[in-house]
Amino acid sequence: MEEVTLESTIEILRSNMIQAYKEKGNFVDSRVVHISQQLDTYIVQLQLLRRHS
Picture 1 (cartoon, rainbow, N blue to C red):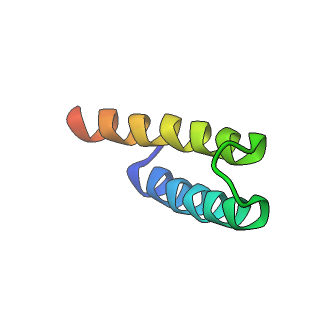
Picture 2 (cartoon, rainbow, N blue to C red):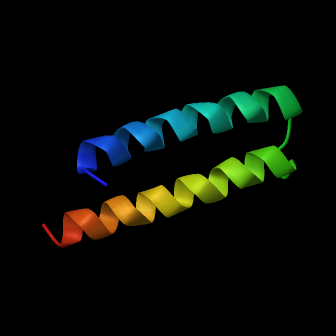
Picture 3 (tube, rainbow, N blue to C red):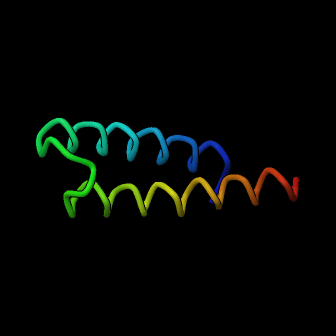
């Protein structure tokens, strides 16, 4: 995945996570945790991509 695409995906997920938190009111809600885990995966991918470029 390209760096720009990863950055965009990260921003979308970050926004989705914030919205889910606002709706659920806590960070341990399953939806918030799921989005956070996805976000972590993409952040690691971006870091690896940047490290190898």
